[in-house]
Image (tube, rainbow, N blue to C red; front, side, top):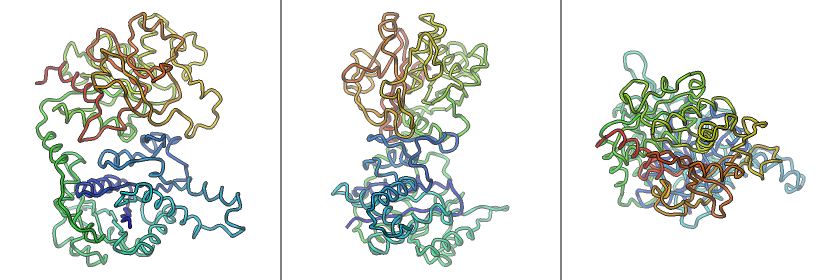
Length: 547
């Protein structure tokens, strides 16, 4: 029988359930178990695809084209289990499915209710993930929101039922709570006590507690928590603040024997732990020398999670290249207002150590017209100063717009996303998107093969012609202008297998100026940096002369 671990949270949001669940998954994989991760999101949206990045952070895309919560990105970076549409369960999906079944008469006229129909749908989706691969040992199910939220109740009830049906040695509850620090440095356990009480009122007795605290809890505090929550003291763990990286958390939990306690609760025989990749990663972290400053020129700079996977991929690349990567967040609207972009970006050729100076520029994905001209200025500055430049999705389209405006002299060159009436639509809507009215889940989504051209940076990065990465966009390089662009020097570095769509462009006579239509950040890991991010940071490092 599959083993199930339900990870819930209490007291407040943003305690790090996703990182805790992912770290536990990494530890169990280190013990030789096959782990699958599932995220249950209480929101009524069918998926995260139509949500504002300002409100919800980035949309993580799976190989099969699911637009999911950013926690699946954590799962992908910490664990190796396959992720697909099945691994993201939302209230919207559940109710949509149940209502469609009711309309089809599949409930035979019965009154459709939250229990059992909604909870049965939730359980069937979780069990489907467990049964999808015959070699799956453990399914870790993270329940979004906090205990007590009205939206989370059906998911917690489904978890209660599965724990009861599977048996206490096959399904356990891991609950993450907050231990706040008040004036004088005193740690307060009362919020945790009340959070566990709320879980117990739902019919779930947590087997393991992970306490989010500013410091490591001492033995006396752990015993106090255990006494008031009916959790054994050896099953009370601390997720304390780290001044290194979140990727140290699996090792912190390992030192506290979290995986051993979980395996014991699940009745799984203890086995040798192999965490060599994580220890090696931390050694690389400690041995970094020098710093590179990367200017992220984007639209959603006020919320760090809006570009979560991009930031993490840059960190991974820094580990592999032996340098610290400092993120310099630049709202592209700020560049629109600047007469000279150098006043914001600095001058690589002049004084790289200047406070405003950046050593490289990255323009990530995005939608809408705001700040676009600022991005074009950033691309032009990087092209002219020979600063390494990396464009992702919209960032590649910005390269093409800059080339049309500032090299070919088409001052109105633009994307039809921003100007429907431009005489030079160098970026245009995909043909299959012209009549699309519903925006949810209708873009070019999921993995697709690109083919790299000989002698290009992209081919050097991947080391092979066929490149498998994920997409999320509606607009493409317009083939109408392909000949004029290439004749003027812009290099088409990769195309789809049939050659119909441009997947990568590169600047000529430039140390590293590259843009891709896909999103390589989604496959980068701390133990294996994305190839393009690695080579981008290496180009910045080498240009800066860091040895």
